[in-house]
Image (cartoon, rainbow, N blue to C red; front, side, top):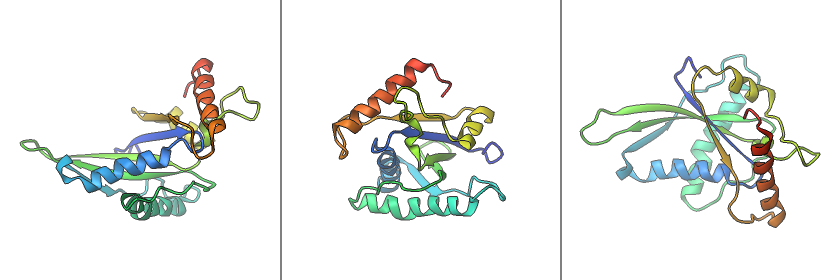
Length: 179
């Protein structure tokens, strides 16, 4: 991603915390409101050739951008992620403001398997990021963004999931973990 001048955005939260809905909402706004002066397009695969499942990870990004976001625009919420691997959705955002030159920003949003953010099975410790995401965080030489999602009200899973999400935030904060 450094070589491609892409800024990674890691969206992390417990199951049903709204990660996919938030990303769909951002992309649908940019795609549906020309007055915002934003043009978004799907970028190139961020996984290099030879990376495990590079092609299928990019196919998941293409599906999210070309099917999940339009479905969200038409009123359907994203389905629960049941993928066994994460993927990045590469998005090129062109900002066009009157009187200013067009500026393009390349972002890559982490999607799938956001449940790293939940409590570990012992209920007290924070789950570790997957080794490849932890390696990205440890070795990436530029700034990156983390968005920690926690639902603001009980979800379809009920009050238990809501409390579990907020417990995860508390444990994460109190642990002083690196990320």
